Amino acid sequence: MRLLATWLINALALLALPYLMHSVQIDSFMTALIVAVVLGFVNTVLRPILLILTLPATLLTMGLFIFVINGLMFWGVANLIDGFHVAGFWAAVGGALLYSVISWALSTLLLKQ
Image 1: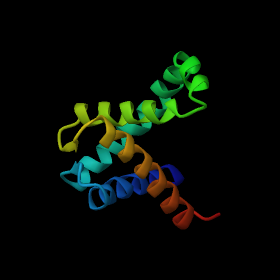
Image 2: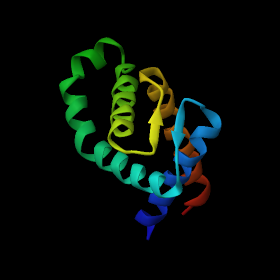
Image 3: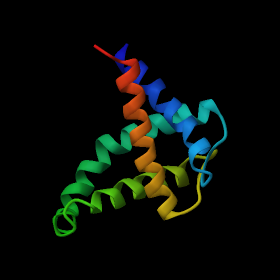
Image 4: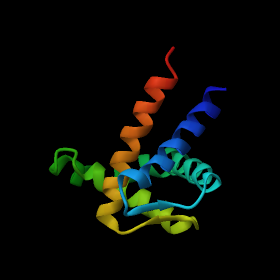
């Protein structure tokens, strides 16, 4: 049940994103649900591999390179899924950052234990 709630919270965070950033667009709620699943899969499978491969750059930039990795994954998912549009790389970095803050805030408010 908690997994379903987290999935819906992430979809709601994706739907809120275009209202805060005009460079990110989502066409429908169904698209937001699909993007939430794909982003979850990418963050679970691909992100740890990328973090290990880019560890020297991450250490050299004192962790700031993780924002670049998150932006690239966000931008990559936008290129994979129709109905989810991101204007460019820096919009993807900002969108990924804002998406994580919104989903964290919503999950903190709605999933209190």
